[in-house]
Amino acid sequence: MEFFNKAKAVKLRSHLDKYLVADDDRETVRQSRNGSSSKAKWIVEFVENKSHAIRLKSCHGHYLTASDVPFLLGMTGNKVFQTEAERDKNDCVRSDWKYDWEPIRDGFQVKLRSWCGKFLRANGGTPPWRNSITHDDPHTASTQNWILWDVEEVELTDSESVADYLSSLSGVSSVSDDVLSELGSPRPVVLARSSFKSPRFSFKSLKKESNKFNNSFKSGMDLFHNAKAVRLKSHHDKYLTAEEDEESVTQDRNGSSKNARWTVEFVPGSESIIRLKSTYGKYLTASNQPFLLGMTGRKVVQTLPRRLDSSLEWEPIREGNHVRLKTRYGHFLRANGGLPPWRNSVTHDIPHRTSTQDWILWDVDILEIEVLSPGQKPSAPAVPHSDSLDFESSSPSSVSIKSGNFSRQESSDSYVDSPPKLEGRTIYYHIADENGEVDDESVEGYSFTFRGNGVEELTRKFEEETGIEGIIMCSRSPLNGKLYPLRLQLPPNNITMHVVVVLSQSKGELS
Image 1 (tube, rainbow, N blue to C red):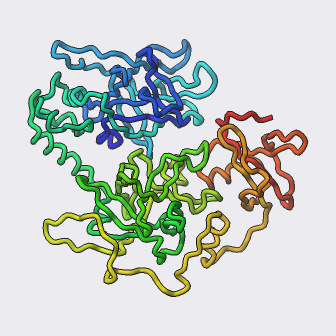
Image 2 (image 1 turned 90 degrees about the horizontal axis):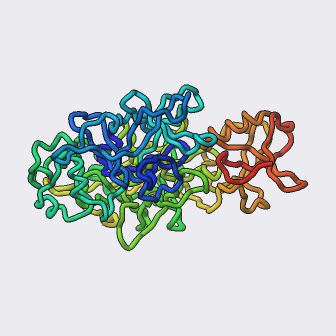
Image 3 (image 1 turned 90 degrees about the vertical axis):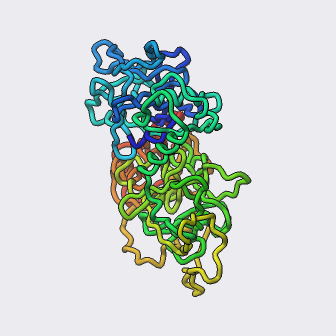
């Protein structure tokens, strides 16, 4: 339920990177890659007397409904529709278990269980299953992920009625005018349904209940308490670093560099959100630019916009002695490992594999504190003074060598004891975009050493190193220039190979 407790509206993304959408016929529910459409937005309602259940209302005002109609005769899955709810004489939604969904957390994703114990399922494969939605139990290992959904919190727009939204939460047909006048904004306060006792309530009680609700979900802010400057160490024992180009953000082992220092700003009016400013006076920003085409991760950069928006805001969520930094998209600041170009890169994403779950965990080292008088609240810190704690060193060993290419970034780790090199072949690779095309293939590309002869083993190693699933290892024919999937065995170890990595959902054609 924690995925939905603070959400006014959400988007649900399937394992196929497609969104749950409500079609214009006000009946059909399917999957679509167009997550920017209003059809992909679902308003969250809490069910009265059921603290563990929610309802999801489409942009057409109809509810996501688990029917008892078979999707295909002889198949186990039943259809999922959007249906208009029946209302009583007070215009309240009648109780109907077919509208109710129970969120069940599964790692960083969620399963939605219907009234009959089955799960909302995003189907793949060939038509008529492709892009369809049913509720069912996965019976094979290959379809276990089909019932897992990423939850992305979204904002309600001006065209979506505040009164209607608050009314849907409270279960009453009207909302007092003084509440709407006090809000004066299309961003209403979200409350648990049980907080409403009667059809009439005051803004004071609304605010009080909201504060009580928010306090129960305080997370990792205590790790930043009274902090003016911090550094963040990733799971790979590298520090979040602002590059000298004043735009890029990477990881580096040199934690004594000024580039690993981030000034903490507390967002006014919020007790759970911070901003992080680099040594160049620019903010750590979760952009919407893909890190690589066809991949889920998006770039994290340094920016200084004229207007401070939510892309600069991070919500610390404590996990043991570590912290996760959550964006407004529901993604997490992620320190990537593995092969170039992922090595030392920083993105915001949701890890889908067990081996990458720790990539979003950070250690917080406080470099400078701000002593507050009783009752004083933290403010946006100024540039550190000369009497502040300074963790930089003037010795040559503290100088961080930076570069725009990945091979020189790796050299910053060279002072660490390296294991002896393993024998094996050198694999040079390029990554194709979603259309199966490769840019600058004439350039040598990235490389890694591989010990083994099997294509399956090579594919598995690449997936483990990069955290990317569903890839096809290909080679380009010197005769016609077409891509051909690698089969069975590789040439002997002493032969250097050049391969092209293609996503299985790529639109390009393979020979």
